[in-house]
Amino acid sequence: MSTQTPGAAPETTRIHNIGYRDYDGRRLGRAYVRRSLYVQSLRGAYGLGRSAKSKVLPMILLGLMVLPAVIVVAVAVATKATKLPLEYTAYALMLQPVIGLYLASQAPQSVSRDLRFKTVPLYFSRPLERVDYVLAKYGAMASALLIVTALPLVILYAGALLAEMDFADQTAGVAQALVSVALMSVLFAGIGLVLAALTPRRGFGVAAIIGTLTISSVAVTIVQAIAWETDSTDVIKWFGLFSPSTLIDGVQTAFLGATSGFPAEAGPDAGVGVLYLLVVLALIAGSYGILMRRYRKAGL
Amino acid sequence: MIVTESLSKRFPRVTALDRLSLDIGPGVTGLVGANGAGKSTLIKILLGLSPATEGRAAVLGLDVATSGSAIREQVGYMPEHDCLPPDVSATEFVVHMARMSGLPPTAARERTADTLRHVGLYEERYRPIGGYSTGMKQRVKLAQALVHDPELVLLDEPTNGLDPVGRDEMLGLIRRIHTDFGISVLVTSHLLGELERTCDHVVVIDGGSLLRSSSTRDFTQATTTLAIEVTDSDEHPDGSAALHEKLTAARVAFHEGVEEGLPGAGHVLLIEATGEETYDLVRDTVAGLGLGLVRMEQRRHHIAEVFRPGAAAQGAEQPMEAQNR
Image (cartoon, rainbow over all chains, first blue to last red; front, side):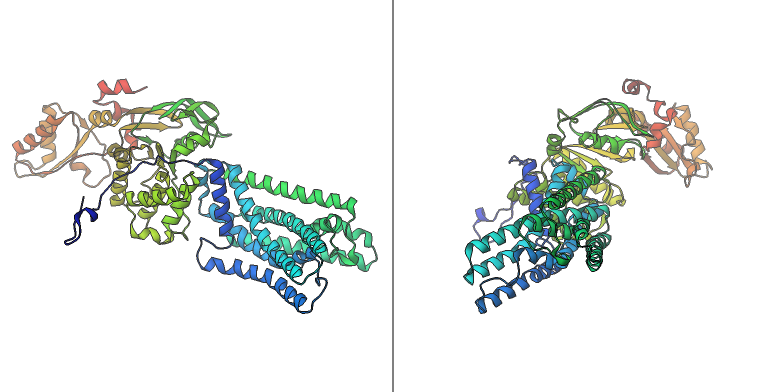
């Protein structure tokens, strides 16, 4: 088929109906597919590649996470302080509600959409396996959380250096805090994805995640406060095992030079800290295991 | 393309597939069976997603038990159910699915544009899928199965929920997948008549085992049924009866009482067409009686007809024997 426009050079105005073309190019196996799904899910966690509306909430929450850091830095630079007014390790725990909100808003959109619209079978009818899907989704959610939690730390660190604080001190502090938020991101992502994947309904997922994080942390705080009031400070550290945020608090108090946020600063010592770390690792492994089980049935 | 050897799949309470042995070659193959006959289970096993309890199966020469991933790279799958997120456009969705099949980003975009055009989606492909009609959604589902240029596509009930026009378009498209795109097709349906028009070969399964496997030509030539309706005239107050008499005299086989309960059933005669000459005979006989021929049409076979032992065997002895197991 060809058409010609009068006056134009005939050889430049041909329209060819080329029919069906075979694809002879490369097919990049599972590793590429896994990476693509990871990138797509990570972008999706910030609303990139989605509608304008879905960019609003993650961006607001990211702003909320970064804003205090910016203010702290501004004050520190202006007052020529020699120390930041807060520890790096305290930052993420202080803003834990924002992190929880971010997780609750983004974990369900990452996994329940595929379940709800039954898109999962389309993935599993392609080269990737269940483990690729779970790893990509888990990795993307953990990375998204890491961006939310690490970005303010980086800003604090940059500000500290700008205010000419002690380089070695600051670097050690931020490095410890980065390890802590990395662990926190993986733990929170696991819990969030498991709760979100239990139901194809997005709303339930959001509620379940907020509920789990808030109730567990409030309950632990109340029980710890009671223990403190009744002068039984040595049991405080044991209660910390029962909520995700106090677990991270315990681990970083024991190993990462943080000051515990527990009442009377009664965080675990290195011995109990090992138990904290084991519980965190068990929760992460458990979340992964549950996700793998979840998608065994969701195949076709 | 697909070979299975006494393939069985048993669940705790049901046997989905029972020693099914198939050998499906290139071309368009229809897989017919009632709901629960084991079609979807078979597809799951062929994609390497569900292990068979017994027996072996190979797709494109690859064993499903060990090479599932390699098979899925060369095979496309269109599920029966809805599987499209409503909030993205067809283009975005199919590009993503192309990448999930291992296509590099640029190739994924090019192939998506090509494939969507081939299945008949044009400007609307930039709009969110949520606003599409059922027919358009089916096309998107088909596009995502074709976008990576597979060797073989498995289409699970692609005409489900479509109106007659949409059905015909979809069947035409399926035909083109083979003739124009050079991709072999395994298409399931519970309507035999539908597949008859599209497929080179039809496999009928029931209760998980093979009921019949034959080329479509055998099916139609052996058992073409003609429905004939004639007017009455003054000379012959009951035109149908008169025609029946004449045709019986000419030794034409009749189907009795098959159309019970349908409107005008009493006036429709169903006969076995053995070839071109039957059409001529009917025309000449009707003309000879001076009746008006209201209709003479090929009856589409319904799956039930294959299951009815008498209907399948009748008048089809010679070619059918070879095909029946």
